Image 1 (cartoon, rainbow, N blue to C red):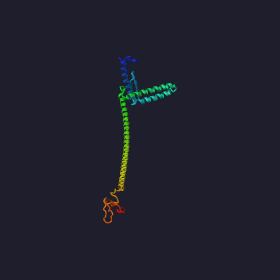
Image 2: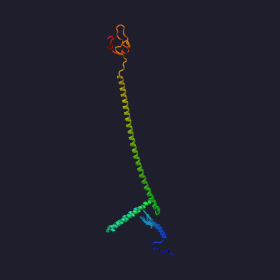
Image 3: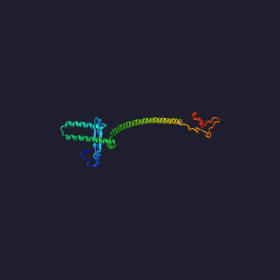
Image 4: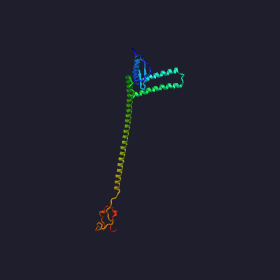
Length: 246
């Protein structure tokens, strides 16, 4: 006895409805894969569950390419068929197109963050892994480039600072030499001034009265009465010495 024809209507039992959805979804994805392989066709399948969960299949590694192709084709067809439609309807279609694309982008973003991966097949997971690996390579390459540029800039700054330090040290040494030379010159001038002052100052004379007597220390001659010069008067010139009897 053959199986009866199933009446197509909404399944009221929630559990039976979920089981049927899971089975039919798997079969639908399998059929989409088969037609893409057997007929070399580009297939894009999008299914939303009653809870809003997205299930998709794409024969191309990137579903966006198929969706963009579909959008270009459908947009061209609409322009040819309904070119006389009001502007409001065109805006409605454009809004629906942008909304669908936004949902796809949000779904891809969640997948890149590791979310909503239950409905992805092995091929889709492999494509996602390949995209993440490629993105990580670009990120690491850019990071290494920025680090290399930062290190090069720091090396340049370090070299410039070293040159400034060397220049300042050289200037300090030159100033120290100049100050040492000035100090030595001042000391030489002071020594010369001390020597000149010591030469110009007269020595004190230990003399007594020029008109000496026998009591001062001079010896009087017996014959002529002239005062004999004392030791103190020995350094005086002869014309300053006069006889004591004058």
